Length: 255
Image (cartoon, helix red, strand yellow):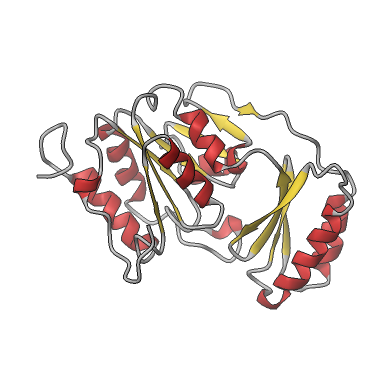
């Protein structure tokens, strides 16, 4: 999958629209990475591209993100047919269906207070609270990465049953329950219509997305990653636009 010179996957590598299912990461893939989770920006034209692509694939377009589902709904409301949030902890299989949450251990009650104390010692660092875990962000304090990792590992040492683990992310460390990841999210999504029976195509940019790529490949699908296959999110969005605008026969990507 990796190469020394980033290049776009050719349309000929893809299954036809009637057989394709797209499962897309959000941060660093659909949108550029921002200093804070709430400050990301959806570039003009992206919603229209996603809607067009979703229609070409019979609805089989999902966002698979580390964010809570509510945040995906906030940034691109009504666009993906399905959403998997919190790395697969929460899955909504269709717009009119409820969110299904995995049964997972509760975050130890004092960990959040400890995390707030930890980032207070590193100006620019912050804590993101999730329903089943937390994230220590250090994009605003890049020199604090090693120290925050050590602090996170100290918290994990208080969990002798090893119910939680440390997940590497871009300029962040996430404490999350084990056994659930983007690969398990892909497997869940691909079990139900309109995804079932299609070829999954997972695209992401982060270490956490490698699970999604492996999950798609295990089902006979494809996985691409920024910057290995696209130089940056801009190039990836342009490629999505090519797919959405492709005007060949109904069962082909090529004109």
